Amino acid sequence: MSEKDFADIGAAASETLLGPDDPAPFEIVNGDGGAPFVLLCDHAHNRIPASLGALGLQSADLERHVAYDIGAEACARYLSERCDAILVKANYSRLIIDPNRHPRSPTSIPKASEDLVIPGNHDLGPEAVALREATFFWPYHENVSQVLESFRAQNRVPALISIHSFTPAFLGFERPWHLGILWHRDDRIPGPLMKRLAAEPDICVGDNEPYSARSPEGYSVETHADNHGYPNVLIEIRQDLIDTPSGVTHWSALLARMLHEILADRTIFSVKRFDAHV
Image: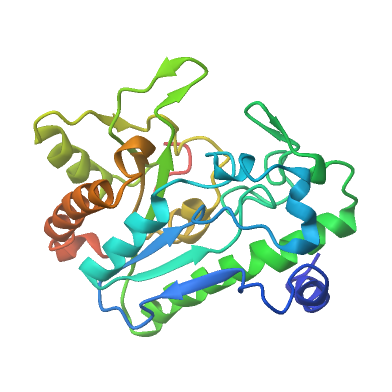
């Protein structure tokens, strides 16, 4: 399906999936920010439009990690303000369609997540899937692309920093990491960031933990940064550390300080290609 096909479906989608009181599928915060990097928040919200009937779920289900990354939006907004950085965030729950999964992959529109069955995601035909992609997925990613292209139009190489959060425990395993630094082949930001975090007292930092950016599942950083040779990092913060305003401030301020130090090295901002097999 071509981009034009998606655009045509998107016009209908705005009428059938998003009502007049529903927000746009994405939001750009601090669009005139002067920082040399762009922030992403793929899983900022647990919002589901009325047209999808809460996907057959209870309101309590939508307060869980399965629906969004708890605390991630607050941290991303803090970093945007503190660092004067542009932030692009998705405005709807990943349960509708996950912005950080490849379209049409089995995890793009999950039928179940952890122990939760999602009735509204069963028995979707190709048109219903394409409609969700056109309504929620492609507009978000098209705007990420446009923001990054605006840097290139100014002859600047952007860095991309994606903010996520993870649960303190999974399947009975207590996760020891305070933060996880996810990266694939480009260690220009992850390397010095992990070194600084490891030097802090009482901080446990995960190198591609509790998830790995070397997994083929992730979409956003791979598509918008790795594939273009832009410096990048995906930062995961444990949710129990950022579920209060004071926690958000503490951990976001720490990251803001470290990112400021790392990105003061202007040699980072170049297009650098890596062997796909590394």
